Amino acid sequence: MNNFDGIEEPVVVSSVGKKRKPSKDNHEREVRKRVRNSGGGKIPVIACSHSESKNFCHADKLTADDLVKNFDTLYCHTTKAEQDQAILRLITVKRVQRRRPKVAIEDAQKEREVTNEYYLLSKDHPTKVPVCKATFCAALGIGKDRVARVARYYAENAEARPERRGGARKVTENKEKKKLVMDHIQTFTCRASHYGRRGAPGRFGLMV
Ligand SMILES: [Zn+2]
Image (cartoon, rainbow, N blue to C red; front, side):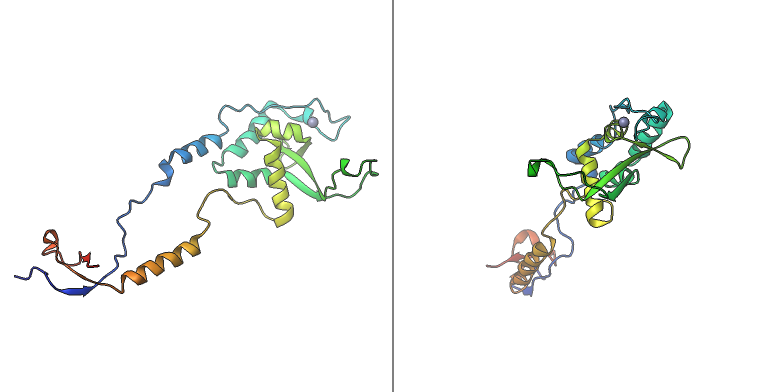
């Protein structure tokens, strides 16, 4: 009977590792992320008293149904990247046309290259209602910084902002390291000498 003792054989690197594959959807952090992006607990409101007759912001034209419609249009998307795209569809990013005269202190005026116009959907679709930033944010339940980041990314890259958080950042570097280790392992020969592995071809221990 061949008990595989004393047979030197080259190492065959298994294509399937034994490491447990993580189920990303069940990670606590993913669950928290879904809750954060769900819009739950937020109530769409109008945050100003602007009116069509006096202001560029026509918030007085928005009905309660319009607010719900806008809110749902955003939160029917569950990921941040998709929501950012939905936000972007309601913003018009424009180059600054006219500059006001400089104020005395040089730094007091920010030199903005682009300016954003905010719109919300209405029952007169596809006509959108122009609104101020405060109402835009309050109606959608989002922060002004998020709006600013979405608009800035679009102004610089001409596309919606992808998910830029998390993820593997050194994929190539890690793959190279892994290959070095694999190549090194394959330079060894091994012997199936452990009693527990007798009769189990393909499972070896390295003889170092
Ligand atoms: Zn307003």
